[in-house]
Amino acid sequence: MFSFRRKMFNGFTLVELLIVMGIIMLLTAILFPAISGAKKSAMISKAQAEIKMLHTAIQSFRNEYDRYPLHGTKYRDATSDIEYDNSELISTLRGNQKTAGVTDNPRLISFIKINEASLDESGQFVDPWDRKNSTFGTPYNAYVDANFDGKIDVDINKGNVNIQVVTNAPIAVWSMGNPKDDDVGPYTSWGGEYVERAKK
Image (cartoon, rainbow, N blue to C red):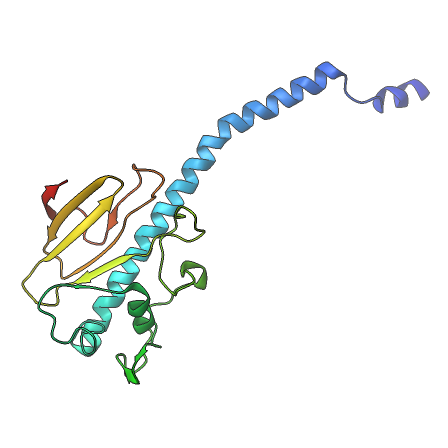
């Protein structure tokens, strides 16, 4: 009995310990790419869902008020497509926007519900990827066809590539994608339904 207990509590030999550590390191090496890939896929899915949500909120505002957000105040006499100030647009769509005492969303309808973690320090709605020197993502871009010519001219900049596009969609929302990975993004609310005009 005594010899059995002594053997039971002697612990691992150095060789056994090294074998266990080797197995753990091998499993970590196998699992790390899978975990990293799952995280990347989750961020892409989140960005695509948020783009769709913002696009739908702008369309819902238009359906409710028969005009685009802020078109009744700041952009009343727009002669070209509107590129929104992100924080101003989000404030309007959340139902708490006021400009010089005038409420652009007079019924204070909440067209969009956003987790506070998705807003940066200035109230901008940001994508899931961290910017350089920041813990926040890049603000989503939103345009509307305010001059009703049936198209939106958009500049999408990704790294060293500037793509000028024309989309037939009346609302254009997009994210540049991951600024640290050229293969991730951009993502758009209109999908691939656009015509490339030029690449610089």
